[in-house]
Structure formats: C-alpha cells, structure tokens
Image (cartoon, rainbow, N blue to C red; front, side, top):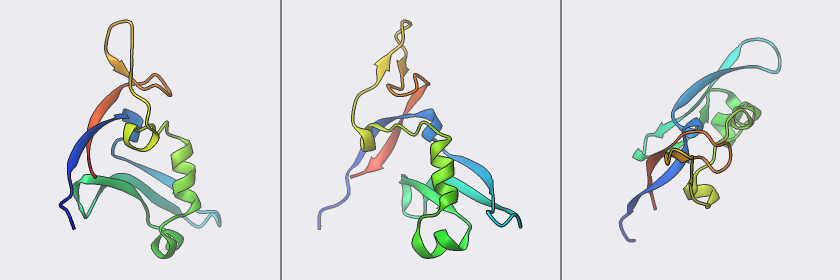
Length: 106
C-alpha cells in the first residue's frame, strides 16, 4: 500500500475547527458537535458528536444540523477553485467569505 500524500487544498473558513452545542430532541440536555482534527493526525479533519447515535453509526441529526449552519465549501470535496475579490484576496466561491489552505491526506 503506498504512503499517504499530504496536499494543500483551499476551504472556506467556516469549515475550520469549531464547536457548537445542539439541544437534544428530547429536551434533556445538549450535545457538543465538533469539526476538527481526528486522532489520525493533523492532516485529517472530520465531524463528531457526543450523542449515542453518532457513537454507533458515525452520523446523526446533530451533525447534519451543524453542517447546514456552515458554508462548508472545500476544494478537496466540492472541486471548483477560489474566486478573487476586487482587492485580489482569495474568497470562497460559494459564500464569498474568507478562505485558507488546509492539508489533506490523499
């Protein structure tokens, strides 16, 4: 198996590390939804939630709700290329917000 190659791709800054508390559907508390580095190393980022559904299925409605609250554009996942503002600074092609580079293992 070949070694993983680390490459830089642009992404919307709304896609950077963040945490958000989401209320449970039963109203008995909140769950912490996180997007950030995974235990696999600094080049891998992914979603996580502390609810039991995510623990067993690796997906849940709390993560889906958090995804909808963010632009989430990434060159790696969505393709396309950055746009440029009149000032020349790079911007997100989806929401026109700021962008930065992130390393991805491919």
